[in-house]
Each structure stands twice: as structure tokens, then as C-alpha cells.
Figure 1: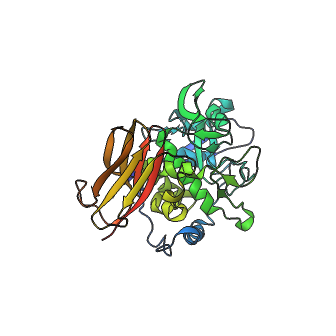
Figure 2: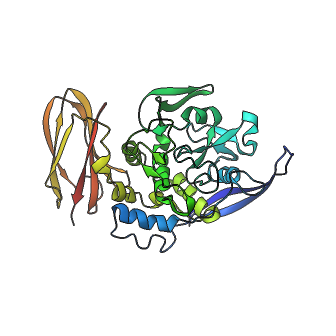
Figure 3: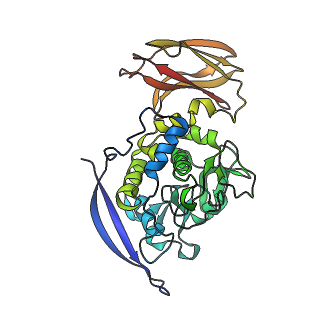
Length: 372
């Protein structure tokens, strides 16, 4: 049994009063496993069929207001994003900085609430539904939130230096790259939104696109899909993300983010290896034969210039299985044999793996299928 301690805050806000009184309860939260049968009906599905079944599973969640005298988004984020070492503080998502949770906005001195799926991408505002869905809402530094604005997510640009210091986030005129520790969190939140909101009951039909739509644009589209797929692999699900998913399900919305529970659903719906390099005109070449294979396969790759390269094998949870190459490579063709059964300290199960070749400027990926 995995025990996690949370402080639950229930605020009572009265009109005209600045002071906020908190009744604080220290409770023991038993980390939930995925409820039995929660994902029934998903076995063997992929693509739009899997997306449709997942939508029905996570649809019609319990909704909370953005701001109110009862439990609202402010109150929930103080629990889901509390600092374990100091539960009265919230961890600011893009920077990792900490703020006193009960202060809330505090006339610009506190923190605010960031919609990872920008509210202008669908024009849904802060009404209950996508505007208050805490699976994609996070506490943020106020000026960092403003700098992100409604930018789409992608790599690159200049580092955003906040008045409080460097942030580890990068930006261009229309894209935003968060710090590495939360890239996967961003991706899985955006994937959730694209599945949860399909146009029913007056809600927007949110869709992912593989480009950054020109602003201003109120279409319900968000990008950049190929980068989000990369981030999902680079930054796999961690315990804090799982714990947050449990709290939202157990204590508030009563629905889960499927891509935290089952990271492999991302590959099954959006085909990582088929689409995650469309933003790169890559000079790299990567071939795997035979594929599928029983025990071993030959991995051939080509480098265009003398450059540092890495050749890594990942499982579908984004976990590194083994590093095959890590060196300065001369221009030319190379080949290496990978014995999938004995290349690591433990015997690998049959299944789908990702072979990733990357240099300092380019990246390419191929799916590998190891048979029983």
C-alpha cells in the first residue's frame, strides 16, 4: 500500500472580504491504482476507434467553477500541485518556482492559473468544461504565463528571462518550449484535451495539428503535434504526474487522463513513429532489418557529416532500454546488431520498441517489433 499525505483546503469566500479562511484537513490519501474495468473496451483498438472509446470513458466529468465561494479551480490546484516539502506552497509549472498557495493572485504578487490548451484555441473561456478542466490547468508565475500567452508548443527560440530570473523556457513569435522536466506533462495534458472534447453537449471539438496556426485564430486547433509526440517520449510519466491524476479522479473530477495511465495509447492513436519527424527535414537515415524480428536485428544508419550522434532504444512508455551508440561519428554508413533478448541486464519482453538516432541538430525514429 502506497501512502501519500495531502492537505485538503476548503475555502469560504465572502463578497467584499479580502481575507480568506481555510479549514485545513490533514488526510491520508491511499494512492489509487487504475479502477478495475475503467479501460474496458479498449483492448485491440487503435486510431480513431480507440480515441472514440476513450472519449466515452472520460466524458461527462464532475465540473467545478473557475472562481466561486465554494470549491473552485484555485482550491483544487492548491492540492494537485502542492509542494510535498511545504504543502502550503504550490509549484509553478513552467519554472519549478514556489509560491504561497493561499495568496492566490494577490493583486499580481501571487500566482495564476495557466490553461495549457490555450483558451483562445477554441474560444472556450473559463466556463465549466474545457475552461476549468484541471487536467490541463496548472499554477504558474504571472509574468511567465503572460509570456507564453496563447503560443503553440514546439522546440527552439530564445530563452525567456523573467524579471525573477532564467526560466528554462524558450520561445519564438508563435511557439513556446517549456523546461525539459515538464515537456511530457504538457504533451499528455494536450492529448487528453483532444480526446475529452469532441464537440458534444455544446463543447468545442478540439483537434491537434502539426503546425503552429497563425494568430489571431480562434479555431479549436492546437499544435505542434510532432513536437508533443517527441516530448511524450523524452519525458515519460513520473510518480508526481500519476499522483496528480489520482487526486483529480478520486477527489474532484472523477475522470482520469488515459495517457498517464497508459502511455502506449499515444502511439496507438497518433503513431509516434509515423509522424513525429514531419517538422524535420532530416539528413539522417535509419533502417532496421529484419523487422519484425525474433531475437536480433540489424540496425543500419547513415551520418551526413562528422558529428556527435546517439543511437538509443526506448520502450513505448518512453523509458530508455539501452544506448547502442554514443560517439563522434564520421560521415558514412554504419551497421550494428541488436540482440533484443540479451542487450540489457534483464530479458526484454516481446513488444514494440522505438529506435532513435539523433545528432545535435537532427533526429529520426523507427518502430521495432520484437516477436515472441
